[in-house]
Length: 340
Image (tube, rainbow, N blue to C red; front, side, top):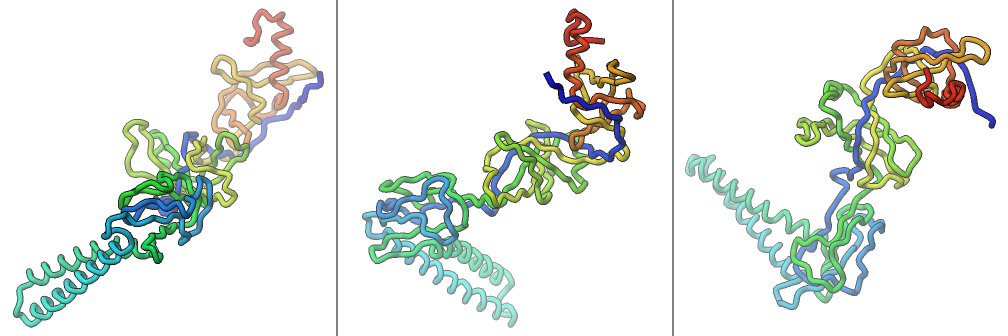
């Protein structure tokens, strides 16, 4: 059998220190929208609802709703409610202007102005959702309502069906723009001192071999999760390729500092035995000595050695496992896996 084998001296390297934790890929807060029925009715069978995974554009018609049988339903109901709310705002504005003029002329008390201002604010609040509904629907000749996508993205959930009745405000489907995602990482309470720094991170997800890097730190939470005793940290992750999916769990490495000029060996040089770490030294010829070492930070495939090596020894950096097996075999297997 040919064994891939290499012996080199430890090297001095600047290594980053990291804390490893778990995380989850979630939608960006303003890139997710639930499309709801603006009015009660029946999801029309004349237009197929988008399927899960379909990409839709902002403003695209995603559903048609047939008005209910009762005469006050459909687009007419929305139009009447919108016109009435607009009228209330106009009247409240006139009353506010009048009260302000009278107060300026020292005829009316300030309380009247404040009451008129409160009424105007209330009327505007009632008008706002109706204006949004009018902007998202479009009546057809039959009074059918066309419901449009408020954001561009991918349909991730469909909660209504063609021919089924829906109430006003009932969700029809959910859209998520996955071109940019957030990585929500859970920073252990013992590491919150690093939260004030400019955090850098890398992460991996199951099923993909790549190591991904967020583009920036979005926010650091102010409150620990009472169950996990971790602090939520949000990173922004570009995802134009669409390879990363919402809901994927991630293994996250958050950089917490650096060690300059660390004595380091490749990770493959280390052998773990009963919770202790060892390397194999080649003092001469084909003889090997096993040396216990203490390890520090790990970065880029290299591990810091804090004690156990001087720096001028020849260390088995590739094929250490086979040296260990050969050592055990030479001892007759009596101490298989625990050679000294």
